[in-house]
Image (cartoon, rainbow over all chains, first blue to last red; front, top):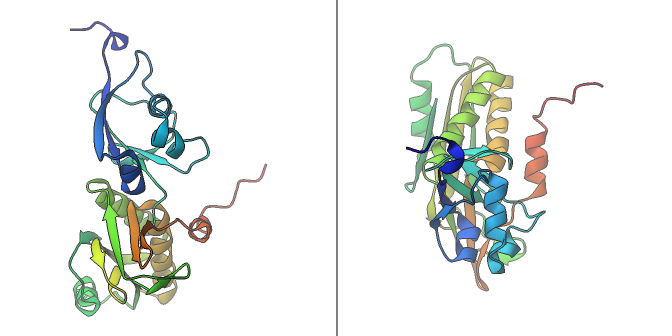
Length: 94
Length: 155
């Protein structure tokens, strides 16, 4: 058993909704985070670095909200192994 | 307090009767029904497909209803939101609020819709003669929800 959290790989389950699902060409994927980078900000940085639709849709200033385990969070929120992290375009229900 | 996400249509009369449930304390019932229009942003809309985020949607709606219950003196509230493909004139959403007096019922009903519009994970996709398109969020919806924010504390 690892003796500290920093030695443990954190893998989250990413979920893409609505327009983002179509832009990224997938509904979800597993993402293992870089060591010691366990925040929502880090996840967005990894995705933007892929370029293409990821860089365009997640560019700073684009209105994308993040939900961790079904609750909206701020970008400095820390994620844990096994978390479901969803990327939501601005909602348009009602 | 009840929230439902469903593909099936709803019968507002039946839902209102069920929510009132013979509660003699109820003196006011406010209801809002949202329906599909056939024109949006200058384009004819043939159909509207509503997508949501299963798992989060119900929790988000329940949180909004709980918030309304905390802010207003109401007896009960119901939110039903449909998903799937709808046609113009179809019903999309139902909000019903019961209270002793009309003021709280009206206010809570409006609050529920304003918050639902900006916080519940639903997305609309329209089919028009030019193809399909995701509906853009409106700044006016954010402004409507912000009306319910507490005034900033004086510094």
